[in-house]
Image (spheres, protein in one colour):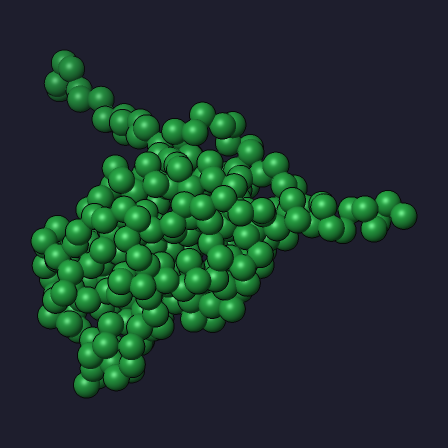
Length: 282
Ligand code: SF4
């Protein structure tokens, strides 16, 4: 019999444990998926504000990225497909002191939820929207999305996508967003700082994050996870203040990252107070 039997190892504490529902781990995200990196940057940004966690809420729609709302240890809402922004807008209008973060994917926010996105930006609703853009519908099997590059192969475009994708920074900026930025999962420090800055910004803030889906996009386009990361490293350029009209995603030409928009404009709740409150007092 051994004199000093080995004690079972105690799992090491993770610095973000206080923001994660650890009882729900392991998560559903596939090996090589970039969502976890975006999620951890978002949690680090929340932690970095020093604001008590009960002053935050996270809302997501449906899809792989949208699972984030189920893993975060905040008051959070995993809502219906495409409807994260209306839920978040309702929460913000009911409790303007809350920091409301929408964490969802490109399919959820820009296809079924596209109309909600443009109107929340137009109204300058005080939300921070983090969009994980993996260029496809990952969870449902890799169908073509509103963000899929022209000619890319998906389950529903086996010969290549004949359509042009949305330019998300251009759409956000043209709709009226106060803050617009784009990063990739390789740029985690910039991403964390940007989410932190966006949370402090009054008005509609939008951050697009390019993130690989090796299982349902990379596989069909003969792009291994490391190939995607190489594209993020070698075919991107940081140009703060660039014209969002030049922010198309075309890795042959090069993809622009950075902060495109940072403007001050009256927010929806402050306009509501100045226009509607005097009438309701009559
Ligand atoms: S299907 Fe794609 S986006 Fe979804 S978890 Fe897997 S790799 Fe990530």
